[in-house]
Amino acid sequence: MSDEVTFSALGDTRAGNGDKRGVLNGPNKFRASFMLALVGVVLVFAGTSNALIEVLAIACGIAALVARKVKSIPREQQMAPRATTIMAICSIVLGVAVCFSVANGTGKLNVEVNADNWQGGSIEVNMTGTDSSGKAVDETLRVTPGKSKTIPSAKAGTYSFKVDESALTVNDIVYKVDQSSERYDFNKKSDMTVAINLVVDEEATSALAEKKAAEEAAAAEQKAAEEQAAAEQKAAEEAAAAEAAAQKKAEQEEERLNRTVYITGSGSKYHSSGCRTIKKSSVTAITIRDAEASGYEPCGVCHPR
Image (cartoon, rainbow, N blue to C red; front, side, top):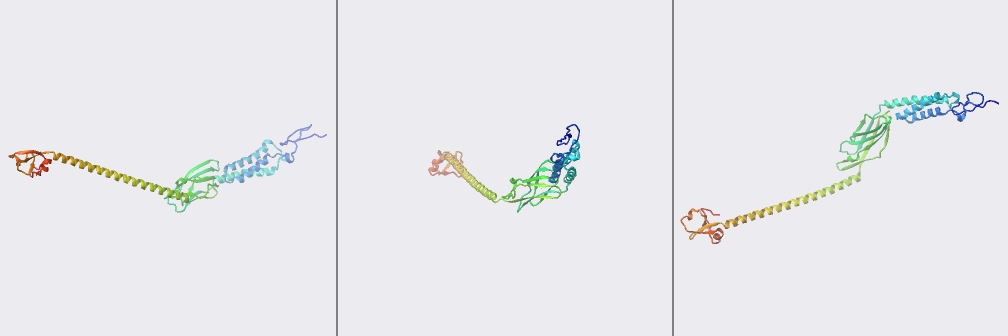
């Protein structure tokens, strides 16, 4: 009876009295290298603008070649060895080529903001995403609507752009972004321009106008109330001042009327105590009030007051 030989997936099993290396057939053939090479080819064409994916493709190609050497699998026990070799080499060569192309591309990434009748200055645009090496990108740009902004530091990668909408109000006109946030794949092989369109937000503009009108009306009302209060205060102060002046004048007049003056028996004037016209006359002391009430007039020489 002949020796029985069986094979594992690696194709090396001994049985019976002999020591023979069998040949794997059909589903039992060594598939690892073939599958790695196939994955490498798929990754090469799937990541033409992503260096990280290309590195994985290169790694798969190298692993496909190394796996056969490490396992020492005979050629006849491998699945499609020639195709495996070709796919592995393609993964490596094309992956390196794409990585070089991505790293040394000359394409420029531009951002432009379009807005009709824009009368403001530049606005902030936030650029976020991941470049081809897997590095996170978060950069703030200043872009003037109507002009294109070139990003010299931009590498190949996938990015999104967001406008700071809090700064989109100019001369009582409110703008908004006319599209949802999108992601852009920049391969650096050719120039790419990201266009952000701004349109007038009619609802927000109307609401702003109503708010401003209400604020202006409230301010005018407050100003009128303040002016009225100021006028009333001024009138009250003037009235108080007039009353005080009148009071003072009345007090001064009362003081004058109570002052003592002198009259003679035959004269029609009242005099101060030192008046020269009454030095040789007999005089009578009297208040100005009583003197004037009796018809006396102040002396034209001493002018009693």
